[in-house]
Image (cartoon, helix red, strand yellow):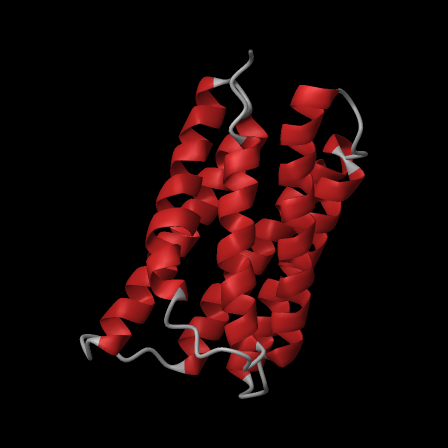
Length: 175
Protein backbone atom coordinates (compact mmCIF):
# COMPACT_ATOMS: atom_id res chain seq x y z
CA UNK A 1 0.00 0.00 0.00
CA UNK A 2 1.33 3.43 -0.96
CA UNK A 3 1.95 6.05 1.72
CA UNK A 4 -0.93 8.54 1.53
CA UNK A 5 -1.16 11.06 4.33
CA UNK A 6 -3.84 13.10 2.54
CA UNK A 7 -6.80 11.64 4.51
CA UNK A 8 -5.10 12.46 7.82
CA UNK A 9 -4.05 15.95 6.76
CA UNK A 10 -7.49 16.83 5.43
CA UNK A 11 -9.29 15.33 8.44
CA UNK A 12 -7.09 17.31 10.86
CA UNK A 13 -7.66 20.46 8.85
CA UNK A 14 -11.41 19.87 8.55
CA UNK A 15 -12.12 19.20 12.21
CA UNK A 16 -10.08 22.14 13.49
CA UNK A 17 -11.56 24.46 10.85
CA UNK A 18 -15.07 23.23 11.69
CA UNK A 19 -14.69 24.09 15.38
CA UNK A 20 -13.06 27.48 14.78
CA UNK A 21 -15.67 28.35 12.15
CA UNK A 22 -18.44 27.69 14.67
CA UNK A 23 -16.66 30.10 17.02
CA UNK A 24 -16.31 32.69 14.24
CA UNK A 25 -20.05 32.37 13.65
CA UNK A 26 -20.71 32.98 17.35
CA UNK A 27 -22.24 29.53 17.95
CA UNK A 28 -19.57 28.43 20.48
CA UNK A 29 -16.95 30.40 22.40
CA UNK A 30 -14.09 28.54 20.72
CA UNK A 31 -11.85 27.67 23.68
CA UNK A 32 -11.77 24.05 22.53
CA UNK A 33 -10.14 25.21 19.27
CA UNK A 34 -6.87 25.94 21.09
CA UNK A 35 -5.84 22.35 21.92
CA UNK A 36 -7.09 21.26 18.49
CA UNK A 37 -4.93 23.95 16.87
CA UNK A 38 -1.84 22.56 18.61
CA UNK A 39 -2.38 18.85 18.26
CA UNK A 40 -4.76 17.90 15.45
CA UNK A 41 -4.77 20.89 13.12
CA UNK A 42 -1.14 21.67 13.94
CA UNK A 43 0.95 18.64 14.82
CA UNK A 44 -0.99 15.93 12.95
CA UNK A 45 -1.25 18.06 9.83
CA UNK A 46 2.43 19.05 9.96
CA UNK A 47 3.42 15.38 10.25
CA UNK A 48 1.11 14.55 7.32
CA UNK A 49 3.02 17.17 5.35
CA UNK A 50 6.38 15.60 6.17
CA UNK A 51 5.04 12.17 5.18
CA UNK A 52 3.79 13.67 1.93
CA UNK A 53 7.28 14.93 1.13
CA UNK A 54 8.59 11.42 1.88
CA UNK A 55 6.03 10.06 -0.61
CA UNK A 56 7.33 12.63 -3.14
CA UNK A 57 4.08 14.63 -3.15
CA UNK A 58 5.34 18.22 -3.07
CA UNK A 59 1.87 19.77 -3.29
CA UNK A 60 0.51 17.88 -0.27
CA UNK A 61 3.79 18.30 1.59
CA UNK A 62 3.74 22.05 1.10
CA UNK A 63 0.04 22.36 1.89
CA UNK A 64 -0.11 20.18 5.00
CA UNK A 65 3.19 21.41 6.46
CA UNK A 66 2.19 25.02 5.88
CA UNK A 67 -1.33 24.72 7.29
CA UNK A 68 -0.02 22.63 10.19
CA UNK A 69 2.37 25.50 10.92
CA UNK A 70 -0.55 27.93 10.56
CA UNK A 71 -2.52 26.07 13.23
CA UNK A 72 0.51 25.87 15.53
CA UNK A 73 1.12 29.61 15.16
CA UNK A 74 -2.58 30.36 15.61
CA UNK A 75 -2.60 28.25 18.77
CA UNK A 76 0.46 30.08 20.09
CA UNK A 77 -1.11 33.44 19.20
CA UNK A 78 -4.27 32.57 21.14
CA UNK A 79 -2.34 31.09 24.08
CA UNK A 80 -0.01 34.08 24.48
CA UNK A 81 -3.00 36.41 24.18
CA UNK A 82 -4.91 34.47 26.86
CA UNK A 83 -1.85 34.53 29.14
CA UNK A 84 -1.48 38.31 28.63
CA UNK A 85 2.01 37.82 27.19
CA UNK A 86 1.18 39.56 23.92
CA UNK A 87 -1.77 41.67 22.86
CA UNK A 88 -2.33 41.41 19.12
CA UNK A 89 -4.43 44.03 17.39
CA UNK A 90 -7.21 42.95 15.09
CA UNK A 91 -5.32 44.68 12.26
CA UNK A 92 -2.24 42.51 12.91
CA UNK A 93 -4.36 39.38 12.86
CA UNK A 94 -6.12 40.63 9.72
CA UNK A 95 -2.82 41.10 7.90
CA UNK A 96 -1.71 37.60 8.92
CA UNK A 97 -4.97 36.10 7.65
CA UNK A 98 -4.76 37.96 4.35
CA UNK A 99 -1.16 36.75 3.92
CA UNK A 100 -2.41 33.18 4.42
CA UNK A 101 -5.11 33.94 1.88
CA UNK A 102 -2.46 34.92 -0.66
CA UNK A 103 -0.58 31.66 -0.07
CA UNK A 104 -3.83 29.71 -0.32
CA UNK A 105 -4.77 31.47 -3.55
CA UNK A 106 -1.64 30.30 -5.35
CA UNK A 107 -2.02 26.81 -3.88
CA UNK A 108 -5.58 26.79 -5.27
CA UNK A 109 -4.24 27.13 -8.83
CA UNK A 110 -2.48 23.72 -8.97
CA UNK A 111 -5.28 22.14 -6.92
CA UNK A 112 -7.56 22.61 -9.95
CA UNK A 113 -5.46 20.04 -11.83
CA UNK A 114 -5.58 17.57 -8.92
CA UNK A 115 -9.35 17.31 -8.53
CA UNK A 116 -12.57 19.30 -8.45
CA UNK A 117 -13.39 18.56 -4.82
CA UNK A 118 -9.91 19.52 -3.63
CA UNK A 119 -9.99 22.70 -5.70
CA UNK A 120 -13.23 23.67 -3.92
CA UNK A 121 -11.47 23.12 -0.57
CA UNK A 122 -8.75 25.58 -1.59
CA UNK A 123 -11.22 28.01 -3.15
CA UNK A 124 -13.34 28.18 -0.01
CA UNK A 125 -10.22 28.35 2.16
CA UNK A 126 -8.76 31.39 0.45
CA UNK A 127 -12.18 33.03 0.56
CA UNK A 128 -12.32 32.22 4.29
CA UNK A 129 -8.91 33.75 4.92
CA UNK A 130 -9.78 36.91 2.98
CA UNK A 131 -13.21 37.24 4.61
CA UNK A 132 -11.75 36.82 8.11
CA UNK A 133 -8.74 38.99 7.30
CA UNK A 134 -10.77 41.91 5.98
CA UNK A 135 -13.30 41.54 8.80
CA UNK A 136 -10.41 41.80 11.29
CA UNK A 137 -8.84 44.76 9.48
CA UNK A 138 -12.05 46.75 9.32
CA UNK A 139 -13.72 45.54 12.55
CA UNK A 140 -16.58 43.69 10.84
CA UNK A 141 -18.29 40.53 12.02
CA UNK A 142 -16.41 37.25 11.50
CA UNK A 143 -19.67 35.42 10.68
CA UNK A 144 -19.27 35.43 6.88
CA UNK A 145 -15.76 34.02 7.21
CA UNK A 146 -17.10 31.46 9.66
CA UNK A 147 -19.82 30.34 7.25
CA UNK A 148 -17.36 29.98 4.36
CA UNK A 149 -14.95 28.18 6.71
CA UNK A 150 -17.70 25.75 7.71
CA UNK A 151 -18.33 24.94 4.04
CA UNK A 152 -14.57 24.49 3.57
CA UNK A 153 -14.42 22.08 6.53
CA UNK A 154 -17.20 19.90 5.11
CA UNK A 155 -15.50 19.85 1.70
CA UNK A 156 -12.19 18.83 3.32
CA UNK A 157 -13.96 16.03 5.21
CA UNK A 158 -15.52 14.91 1.93
CA UNK A 159 -12.13 14.65 0.22
CA UNK A 160 -10.60 12.93 3.26
CA UNK A 161 -13.43 10.40 3.39
CA UNK A 162 -13.26 9.90 -0.38
CA UNK A 163 -9.53 9.14 -0.22
CA UNK A 164 -10.05 6.50 2.49
CA UNK A 165 -13.21 4.96 1.02
CA UNK A 166 -11.77 4.84 -2.51
CA UNK A 167 -8.64 3.12 -1.20
CA UNK A 168 -10.73 0.23 0.10
CA UNK A 169 -13.68 0.15 -2.30
CA UNK A 170 -12.29 1.49 -5.55
CA UNK A 171 -13.28 4.75 -7.18
CA UNK A 172 -16.72 5.08 -5.59
CA UNK A 173 -16.49 8.71 -4.46
CA UNK A 174 -15.80 11.33 -7.14
CA UNK A 175 -12.92 13.56 -6.18
